[in-house]
Length: 109
Image 1 (tube, rainbow, N blue to C red):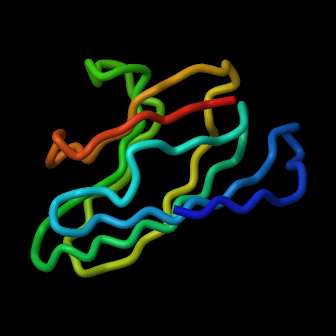
Image 2: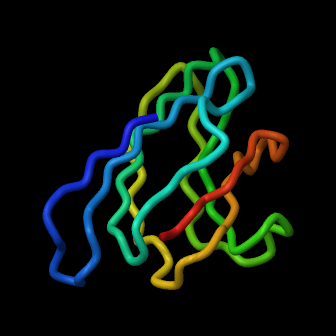
Image 3: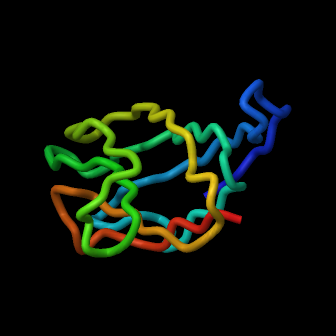
C-alpha cells in the first residue's frame, strides 16, 4: 500500500491516494491510515478472477454504521473510490462486504 499526500483541499482536509489490492481472497494490508477529514481516493485493484469484492469503511466491526460503501466489482478489474475520511481521529474499520473476513483497521489521525 502506498499513500501520497497532495495539497490541502477547499474543505481544509488533505487529499490522499491509497493503492489497495485484493488478491487470493485477502487485502494487501491490514491497516489504512489517513489524516482526519482527508479527501480519500482509493485505487482498488481486484485481482481475484471472477470474484466480487468492494471496499467499505464503518465506524466499527459491527458494520452497523457506514462511513463509505464502494460498489462491488468482479475481478480482475481496477476501480477508483473517493470519499471523505471522518473528521474525528480514531480507529475505524474497513472490509469487503461480500467477504467480511477480508478486513482491517481504518486509522484516522
